[in-house]
Image 1 (tube, one colour):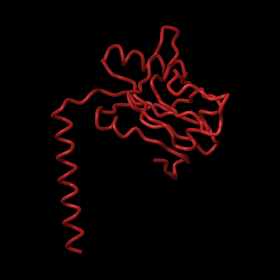
Image 2: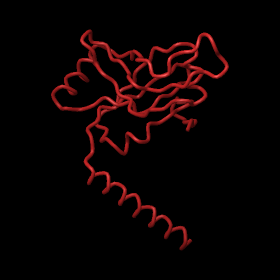
Image 3: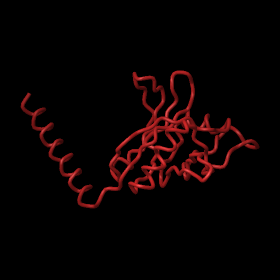
Length: 158
């Protein structure tokens, strides 16, 4: 789950199912407000993106909802709630731009990945996404299968 990339992302956890369910149109990088035990759990890779999404509220703040960060195992008294709403840190211009696209375009704000950068700061990559239809999903799976068959055939010939 957690991988090491060369592009300043030391530990990255990706939302693989979102790529299957949505078309990603634009991505944004946002900071996230966490408690002490949450960052420890993220470093261990104990994050689930199931049913998670972000929303802009009336005050112009972006909140990440339904992101499940498992409670830290070695802490007992000061542990966090697993699916609490978490505030995201974005510029005002970005928030306005995102909000207008969500309202006008009927898009959704989905967390694409969560990672810890080289400065040990946790960041969330948000994606403005549009839902795929069932036939789109089948088409993508067929293309993957065909590409896999082509790759196998190439391996067999060499």
